[in-house]
Every structure is written in structure tokens, then in C-alpha cells.
Length: 172
Image 1 (cartoon, rainbow, N blue to C red):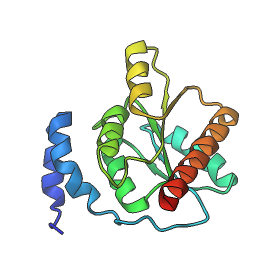
Image 2: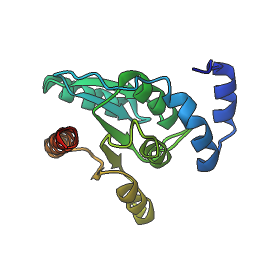
Image 3: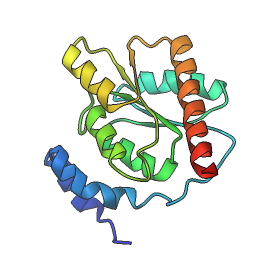
Image 4: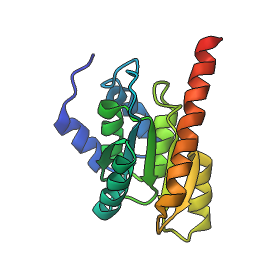
């Protein structure tokens, strides 16, 4: 495995690379993750949002419902967390500094190990073009302000669907 030089990665990310350039470095970042996902009884949720209050609110509520939760402040940090945390589902804001949620989603979906992780977008944007992009890139979309009573069943639906898909693939 190639050695990762943190200073080089920081320089690359600070240059505001385009989607094309990100796709060149993504395999190196994601090669840090395990090739096989370890099975566990607790579902893992990664929350990617630049608002700490949102991460805190969602983390508290998901933990209260038995989920293991990690947070990330932007898409770049989100990709690193996917590599180390191996989430079962990702909940991400659209507009964030460094790397937005849509770019992060497309990069993850282009990688073989992470393409099947469901991703739900959150956003307060009124921009219909951006909402359409999010809906096309991710698996679902929820408007802010967040109603946890709506988000929880949506997460459970995607986790259940994802587990059935994996079980069906292994049986064939």
C-alpha cells in the first residue's frame, strides 16, 4: 500500500481540485479502508455536515435509537471517515466547505468498496437545480429543518433495503 503523505493531501485539497482530479486521488484515500466490511449488530451512521449543532442533534437521536454514529465537518473529512469508520449509511449536507456533499457522494459511488452505501442528503437550499443534483447523486433527500420523526424511518428503510440487497447477492 502506498504511504500517504498528509502534507501532500492537504495541499491537493487546498487547491480546490475538480471532480476529475478528485477521482484520481480517491482510490489512494479509500485504499486505507478494509477490503471487507466487518459485520456487526449495530448499524453505523456517518453524519457529514458543516453545522456542529446538526451533527450533535442527529448523533444524540440516532444513538438513543441504538446506532453507532460518527460526524464529519465536510466532504473531505467525510471520505476519510468512510475509510476508517465503514458506515452502513451516510447522511450528508449538500453545501459544505472544502468539498460539498454532491462531490463526496459521486466520489464514493464511483469506488467499488463504497458504491452501495446509501446516502441521504440534507439541505436547507431553495435552489431546485442543486436539489435535483442531490436527488440524482444520492439515494434520498430531506429538507432542513430536520424532523427526526421523518429521517429515522427513512434511514431504517435504506438500511433494510441495503441488507436485503447484500443477502440476495451472496445467495446467488
